Amino acid sequence: MVYCIVPLKLVYRTSDLSEATLIVAYLKSYGIDAQTFDEQSNNLSPGGNIFAPIRIVVADYDLEQALKYIKMYQEKTPQA
Image (cartoon, rainbow, N blue to C red; front, top):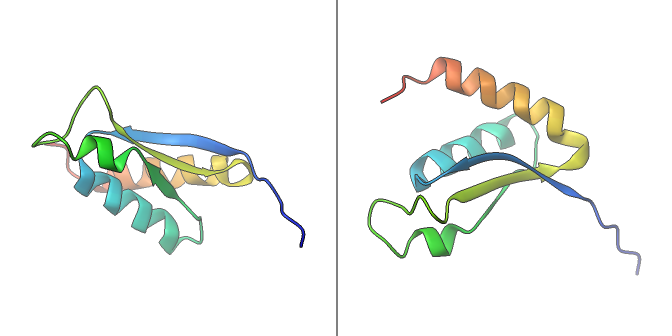
């Protein structure tokens, strides 16, 4: 069996679980395999935790595309 280790790059950070879920789904809709980290520690406090934000990561080779799509997402989404 051959394993391939792919470096992951941070593309976004948020304390809002809903926002993280939407961004991951948005990236996946464009074929980018995005994943979240620190979801569990963020859920420990109601309303999220600014000291333990949820991190969204992608493979190193998807970094530029992911950043482009996140920018597009932010331009389409009204800010609170």
